[in-house]
View 1 (spheres, rainbow, N blue to C red):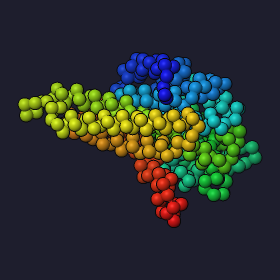
View 2: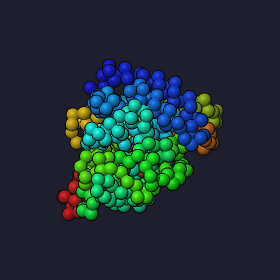
View 3: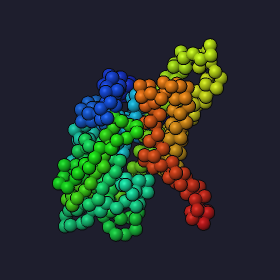
View 4: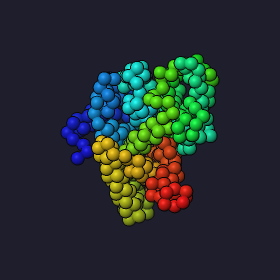
Length: 387
C-alpha cells in the first residue's frame, strides 16, 4: 500500500491549509497575474510542507517520495493551476537534484531556506531555442579560477520574478552535449542577473513566469550541484520527479471539473430537460472519471517503484503523457457542456481549460514523451532494435 494513516494525517492538514489559506485568495491572485510567493511559502515551510521528502539535517522531514506524491495530488484541489505549479517548482523541480547530489555547504545555503520558505526557488533549463531539447541549451558557465562566469538566458521560468535563486543548467565544457553541462545554484541578486520581463500567458495566470538574462554573472564553483559535467544526467533524474508531480497534480483538478460540470449541467435546462439527462453527457462524464482513475493507478504504481528505488522513467513518462492528453480532452468536453458560460472567464471550467493546456508542453512536450517511450521500446528510428 502506497499511503498509510501517517499520509492521511498530513493530507488532512494540507487540505485544511488549502481551504483556509489558498483557495479564498485564488480569484484575486488570478486577477493580479501573480501570488505572494514569499508569504505563502513561508506559511507552508513553517508547517513542514516544503520538505516532506528532504533530508532532516537540512530542515526536511526525511520521509520517502510517497509523501511528496500525496502532496502533489492534494495540491490539485487548489482552484487554479498556477499556484500548485509554483509550489511544485519549489518542492519537486528546482530542489530534488540539490537535495540528492549537492554538497553540505551548498545545501545549507540554498536547500535549507527553500525548505523553510525563506527562499523562493526556480529552475532554469529551457531557453528560447531549447525547450524540450535540453541538450541544445546555449547558456555558458566559463571557468575562471575558483568561479564560473555565466552568460546566456533562460525562458519560461516559473517563479522567476520572485525567486531568490535559480537552479541553472549551463554548459561548463566543450565535450559531448550530454556530458558538458552542470547544475549551478545562482543567487538571483547576483550582479549581471536580469529579469527581462514577466511573460503574459494564456493560462496559469496567478503564477509569475519570467525571461532571465545572465551577463558575466560570477558565482563560486562551490555553488555547483555534484560533479562538473553531470548536470544533464542530474536533470534527467530530476525530470522524473517533475513529471510524476505534474501528473499527480492533475488528478483532483480533473475530478473537481467533472464535479462542477455535473452540478452545472444538472441545473441547466434545454428542450425541457437538464443537460445532464442527455446520455451523451452523463456517459462522457463517466468515461472521463474512469480515465482519471486509470491515471491515478498508473501514478501510484510509478510512486511505489520510485520508493523502492527502481527506475521509473517509463511509467513517469507515460503518466506525464496521459495527464496532458486527458487534461485537453476532459476540459474541452466539459467546457462544451457549459455552453456559452463555458466561454466566459468567470467559470472554473474555462480556467481549467486554459491552465491544463500546459501539461502537454511543460517538463517535456507530448512529442518528447513519445520519443522517450519509442526509444525504450526500440521503435525510434536509429535506436536499438530499429536501426
